[in-house]
Amino acid sequence: MRKPRGKTLEVFEADLKRKVPALETQQEQAAAADAFTAAIRKQLKAARRSSDLTQAQVGERMGVDQSFVNKLERGRVEMTLFWLKRLCEALELEPAVSLRPKATEDRAAGEDIKEKVLAEVRQSVEKMFEEVVATVAPAGKKQTQSQKRARKAVLR
Image 1: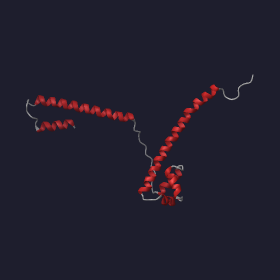
Image 2: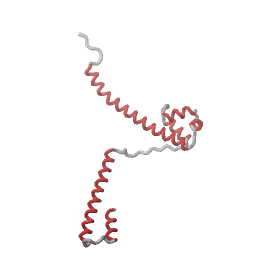
Image 3: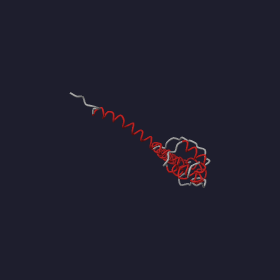
Image 4: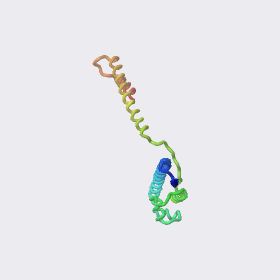
């Protein structure tokens, strides 16, 4: 009896399962890199416009033609570090990297909760202050100016 050539179906499926997550990771990385370079291209284009320079003028400074600058700005040519450096020199910019924490939904939810808690605390403090004022001030009399100022200070 002859052995089957190549991989069995089970082995093929196992290999595929192992490779698919890697492929998804590669696609995610590529998408993140595309988004990052798109943000850089957008900043460079804005810098060129704010300097009142045309693509042709920038190209002349870089030693390339206008259509190449257009392709760089539109992402039709890969924005390598070499071209980024040349563009920055042409636009008289100094490239800088800044890293900051991501804004997350958890952080936003935490801020909402914080605001709700603060509002509840303010209401509780105001209610307690009103009770204290009611016991100190005789019934039917208006609050004095010092009592009003104290109330405002407590509620700040």
